Image 1 (cartoon, rainbow, N blue to C red):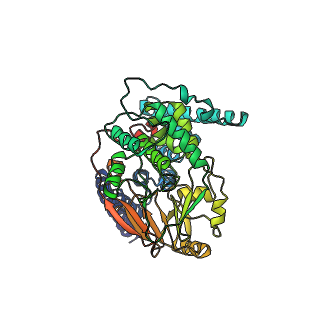
Image 2: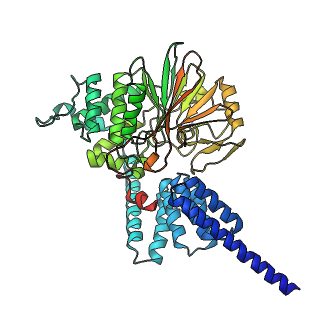
Image 3: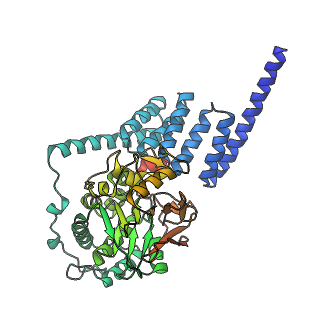
Length: 491
């Protein structure tokens, strides 16, 4: 009898294996169609049937990479290698996850393994060399940073002596100042894929650094009863969609104020055009046009996801250094009528954080790996109570109870944040207390999502959502300037 039962369990195992394979095939199809949420769902179901298959973990890891859940991607790649330490794709996936998280040394170790096992693999060798270069560069930067107090790029610029050539026909600042006419001309110039003269770009950067550096880390504004503000989420270098927002909702002005909630750059390949336009409007309407820092206004992200490469391709490495300085002065949060708090990421890894704590943050730096500044840029809401490990591998996820306690302690009504792609362009969670808005439609030319922006009126502060869809743009792919490791590592 025991023999029969053994056969029975073998048969059951074989059937289970078949079921798991069918689920994997289904997931693969969704993945191919770029429906990563469903791909993750069916890889997870395949793993429930057969939890000891390294390939399923590796495939799900790649789907998580595509949805920017780097923490989950890293965990799955590690699990695949726990099951089969000879599974080469697992090392690739884990290296890509670590690269995305800025953990270059850990990534290098995995690329070393791949090169050792496959000495003739050109792609692996290239990735190893590229990663090794970054690790060495980071070490060099650390050594320099500790040797001297860093001087500002502004000190080494002589903007006055930069000449604008006679054959340049593009927009110029008027007496060194941004005007509405200049902004309209610049937007049209960019629309035709033309480059702003470097002197004008430097003038904007130096002036906006001065304006931003005088602002507090928590900006507080009051809307009168009759006034409204438009809040936009991530724009990620999608310049033509930014123009569309202004077409649908009107150009910024003193009577049409805007707040852009971080992640202006990276991914999309028109990040320079987006950020110079936003900085121009900040100079034109300093008290009616607001910008908050996102997790992509940071050196690590810019190095991996394209902005650094784009600035170097269109201008110079020195200009990127100046952008890096300016980004460090972007405020981290904004409070409207003492009732609505806006930040890029979300709430905090610990209870008890007050608005006063936010006012005291020393923001002029690259964000730390933990603490309130990190959380403001990186955290995400979750449906269940409590907190959990972040899917991104940075900060945390916070539940409705966390939101409730924070709002109560700080006498606020709700929070508005961005940082996550949403199919409808926005999402209302935590019983209306936590709102996400995302303004990059068809994100990276592949997600098929709508974009949205929010109107808030001084009379009732009730959010009013406006959705829009992607508009055509010139044939330049997203991530065109990204680090080659990210371009290929995402395959």
